[in-house]
Every structure is written in C-alpha cells, then in structure tokens.
Image (cartoon, rainbow, N blue to C red):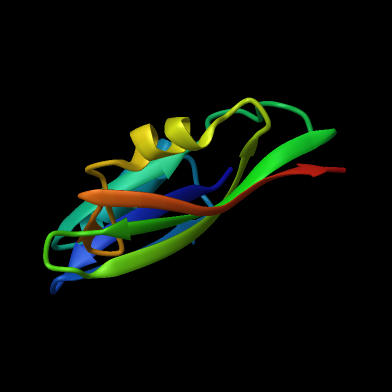
Length: 111
C-alpha cells in the first residue's frame, strides 16, 4: 500500500508518498508534520491494467492573481473535458486555487 501526503508548509505545497496504509500515514503526519496536510490513499486495488483507450489532457489552472499551474492527466475514455473542469474548479494545486480552468490538448488515445 502507498499513501500520498500533500503538506502546506511556509506557503509551499510539498507532495510525497509513504509506503503505508491510511492509518500509518495519518500517524506519521500527526507526529512529524507541523502544518496543514491531506492524506490520499487507495485501500484496495481497483480497476484493470488492460485499457483499450483513454483521454489525455493538459489542464491549466489560474488564480485571480494570475498565477498558473499546468497538469497533464490521463482519464477514462468516458470522461469529458467538462467533467475534468468540474472536478478541479475551485480546488488548489501547487498553491494555486483554480478560479479559472482551461483544457488544452484534449485527445483520445487508443492502445
């Protein structure tokens, strides 16, 4: 199992993984981190490693001050660009709140 910890410290977001489940990652974060953090984990393996097609996109998120973040994602072939925009709008990534979201380079990839 692996858990991802996003830690906001000194106005910077640090993301790292720990080879542990949710409870162990929570215990580590409680004992070692002084600032705000979030823990993400997958309790069991889900899905299949056999994929016929998927959608690839580049997301541009921008806050009201004009700071931008670019994120490349691969999503299920049934997910539209509107679904992606709805999922990330108003969220914060790398310290930038996505007040404005744009999708570039949205394409379907067939394996």
